[in-house]
Length: 302
Image 1 (cartoon, rainbow, N blue to C red):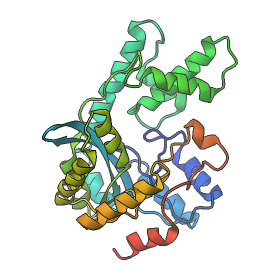
Image 2: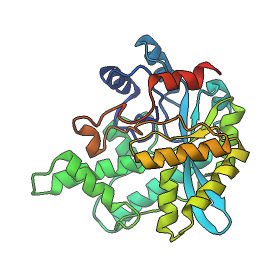
Image 3: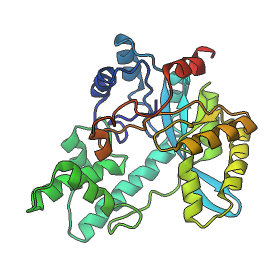
């Protein structure tokens, strides 16, 4: 669960992704592209052909506002929703796409202004054969990585160049440009619920890291309050099982879920395919996440 294709910021097409899933020996998988459902019909069709259990999925970026705490970016996963219903409502997701496109334009402008790298969104789309307009900074940094390789006198690998390019546009990077605001968290959860889906908080420990960076010493209490609030919006569960979590964090999240009546038995690799660690032995699709029996338990009773 929780994987990405080139419809957002995964390194490959839906067809190639399903091939990788099959090679990895997975019994179930869910495509959850950022703010996009364009690849869902093909993904579900190909998974069915390969005898891989699958449900519709999406990862919606949201802006969460909590009194006394800085605005935070929370990602809400939608699972097993009515695809036609969400397709009918996807104009709501256009707000996020516009926010992402503003960032892309800003990043391209930053590079051009300082005469480091001249490229257009259209050129990036053609360069990588994207099925849509560029909506994720990953593709800008990938194009920049190729540019670095062309200019560099060192013998860099593509993954090393990607690492340099990614660092340039991070928050403290010289070419950083912020993404801006996304849909309010409540609206995203209600959108998923209105399509009869399950709303799941992706990688919640990222939020605790954010709170700690902001100097919030009472981050555990804030997370507890946040969970209560998200539950009131209609949240069903959270990702308790990912490689990002330590064993202690998983136990802590399970206890919090028990307290708030949420399901912690969701998880996934958050696979994009392009990260350096995803190319090392033992770090592949299916690393982390939940067991097949938990997958069946989550969705068969619906």
